[in-house]
Amino acid sequence: MSTYPSESECIDILRNAGCEKRVIVHCCTVRTVAEQFMKKIKCDRDVVIAGSMLHDIGRAKDHSIFHAAIGADMAANLGLPSKIVDIIRKHTGAGLDFQDVMDMGLPPGDYMPSTIEEKIVAHSDNMVSDNSVVPHIYSVNKLVKKGIIRGAFRIQSLHSELSNIYGTDLDAIVNILGEHPVLVGPCGHIVDRYQW
Image (tube, rainbow, N blue to C red; front, top):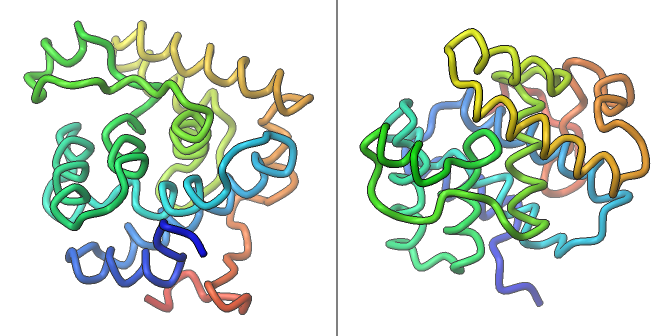
């Protein structure tokens, strides 16, 4: 038996936290991308599923860069395992370094993904825009346009690292899943993306 919340428990947690339907659909889409990563990347599946489902819980209260820190606090207050709290705090882009944390006025802490599970969730999120699966360059270009060059470089580096482990360029997942993949619910049934 897993010590991590199941997909249906994660959906309940997101709902109870006050997340909008589009945030829940986004989280389910990130989980679907993460599932593809896990076909060829060895990791703790339960951690990745729960982490990808809950990574944006902080969006129940805030949609700025602070949502990761807020979400980590929310998860800790709910008594969720520390591995899930860490994924939530570290999922933004390919992480935020000390300089980013200082520049953005975030609460002090470690915002850089280091475990394979943290990296999978962060990069799965990089490959989902709202509820559409996109190539990683979409997120890279978004940061470049904002002048966040170090962050864009980190996403590119993480993409290369995980693609090497996966055995092929992870952007192939866009063609495998399509822009709007079928979302499978906790009981294995196909879910209408607007059901929630």
